[in-house]
Image (cartoon, rainbow, N blue to C red):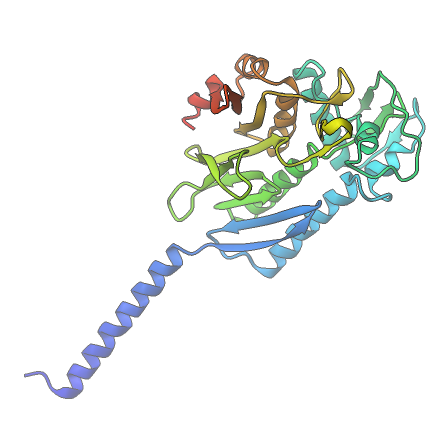
Length: 331
């Protein structure tokens, strides 16, 4: 017969083991999230590993630094200062701004000019960014040259303004991802205003991201993407929320067609790009395909092996259209 004292010890041991198991199981399903506001929107980082205070401070520093490089709303941001610099003159810029301008130039070429970051004056004139009481005359032709990456030189060919709102969030997401990986925080979901990276796993399960239904006024997923491929960058562009109603009840969208210098009018209500390597490219490509529109954007995506999903309204119904690469990635 077991004595009362021994029984008590066994009971305590069993209870202790159960508590340890519950704590272990709970920890396995736990995620840690930090968040805040930036760029006129929100940001969040979720990880299955604990995000220490010094990591949170460094992530906040990355977000702040990119804001001071690329903000349309700060007169003292690097891009705002660059916009006031003289043309045809070598100008030294930061490595971050150089990298952003370099990727933007690549997307400009890839999209046959449908992506253009030198439309800042038009954006300001339409009321989507401040004018700083400056002249908003837009030149039809605009370009810039990047020289010697070691010296970080840019030469502007016009007084048009750079507008980096279509690429800066993706760039910040990519920098945060690089930081997390370098600090062994490999399982994470990063989100800045809908520009995302999902990497690793969520407690041995894929991270899942819902693509917003453009017809819904609240959060409602029309499609769910999950990272079966370990790393995925996801960017969505659309005019279903960021627009104004002008004279004669005309809808004025925040995305501008570089070839007409007017707001786009697209059959595609939502454009989502999934990229295997870069959130910066995903962000810019989503805007490029938004400008190109449907069905031409599907043709561009197929030609360049880009994973693209469109939400298109046809005969008063929402239809999802996919590029070949979307299927190749198993999305």
